[in-house]
Amino acid sequence: MAIEWKDSLKSAKQKAQQSSLNENSQNSEHSENILKILPKILSETSLSHLERIAIAQLIIRDGFNGGRISINSLKKLIGTTSNQTSIKILTKFENNEIIIRVRQKQFSTYKFTDKFVDHLKEDSSIII
View 1 (spheres, rainbow, N blue to C red):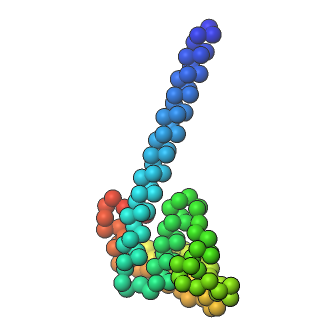
View 2 (spheres, helix red, strand yellow; view 1 turned 45 degrees about the vertical axis):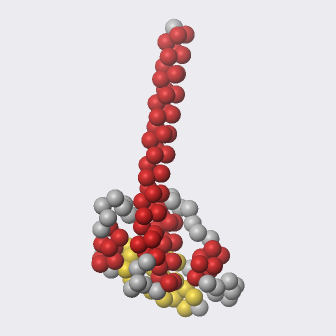
View 3 (cartoon, rainbow, N blue to C red; view 1 turned 135 degrees about the vertical axis):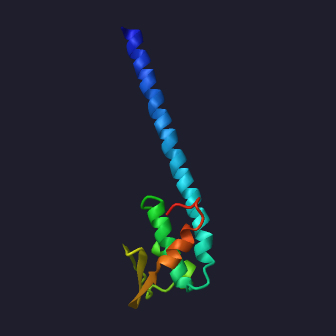
């Protein structure tokens, strides 16, 4: 009886380890996909520097399960360190548009249309 119990415990432990390995593999794949997307965003010439940073921040934030770039890091990337600069990024998805509002003294709204979203999805190995 004790041997059967030990065998079932060992089997359950192996299944849990395998499940954990599969989950880590999926997270790693997702991270790699995000790293493929970012250069495309940062090289997109039709976008301003602030827009590129905003959309990169959105993808990193959502892609890494809530991991966020700090506001100070974002300010550094944009090129300002002033405490007077207030940057807040709000995002929503509407009709296949990514809408990002960046507040820097006043709100600016950036819309990324189907064309831009499709541009990111062109590479079939990329998952958004």
